[in-house]
Amino acid sequence: MDQQERARRAAVARQAAGDLAARDVTGIAVTWVDTTGVTRVKAVPLSRLEHAAAWGIGMSPVFDAFLIDDSIASGRFAGGPVGDLRLHPDLNRLTALAALPGWAWAPADRYDQEGEPHPLDARVVARREAERLAAEGMAVKAAFEVEWAVSLGDGDDFTPACAGPAYGMTRLTEQSDYLRDVVESLSASGVAVEQIHPEYAAGQYEVSVAPADPVAAADTFVLVRETIRAVSLAHDLRATFSPKVLADGVGNGAHVHLSLWREGVNLMAGGDGRFGLTRDGEAFAAGILSRLPALLAIGAPSVASYLRLVPSHWAGAYACWGLENREAALRFVTGAAGDRSHAANLEVKCFDAAANPYLVMAALLAAGRTGRAEGGTLPEPVEVDPVSLDGVPPLPSSLGAAVEAFEADATLRESLGEAVIDTVAVVRRGEIALFDGLSPEEIAARTRWRH
Image (cartoon, rainbow, N blue to C red; front, side, top):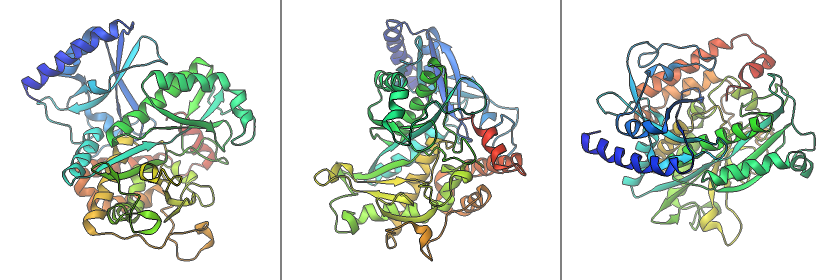
């Protein structure tokens, strides 16, 4: 980042500050997501936005090595007390927060003091992967489904905030004011909500938003979660995005939808392959499917994730794909006849909200891009619950097994970089040790309110 770029950012921030002042904004929350999927923040008064845009906000690199309980692991690239980074708010995503009056939000890109991108900055890594695809004439549209469960009061136990049946209108009626405020706050913050509904588990809801480019999709995931959290607190409720809220319940997923495009054409539709897949679309999907065991270390990154990722719970516990098969880890969605050129996409069902969404995007893009380069092909689709079949490989049933696959994957190592590979593995193994010997109930309780 040179002086000319700093001056440009300062000028943009100066204009933005005037606009935000007219909306009675007094503070800017600048966020990044750490390796455990926790959104961290530093904030500045509006008067300091210009300086923050040009020169960044100081922070320690140590957060990359934080575990879920805020203890700190130690790796080759993160974990010590020495060093400093600069958080530069992305002014293109600067948003006045409808759910937090007086506050605006911007995601951060992290640079070192010399103005170079931090190698562990997941947002930078995701952008780099999107640029690699763009150099090949390709683009991805993506979106996260956000599932969360709502508890009454502010205690650490979970008391479902609604009592109606799964997917029932009763649940919407019980919390109609709350859900209305969630939709209104998201819409007022620039999020295009496509649908919202009660889910299966006790007190659980889901919201779906419009697709965007991969980095923007990850930004939106952060904005949606923090908006839901703020609206929940305003209603004397408490929201959890944990992959396993109750040990004997269904957990929260964070399914990822993505489609591959070239020159405005959706490559997941209109082709000669199965279900209309084009050759490029199939190869992209094959690259993801073949690397799902390794990708779990990014997308299902907590010990609690593997309490959720079990067969016959619609969590995608088997490394297979299928048309509209909600038990397959990779569900192919065509959309309705007449709309498939727009709607056809892949849904990755085995991921959850403990994930860093930027690392998720970076890893999925890298896997899909490599699948294209390899000319990958998909196996036969699975048309039933895979638990009933022989020969369908299960995904890793523990975080330790996923980490081993992750470290051995050459594509992810090349794409994400040695610093990311080492730090993710160190943090994951730190959390495995942290939860070693605990019961499922204890694991669920200790992770319930961290995401």
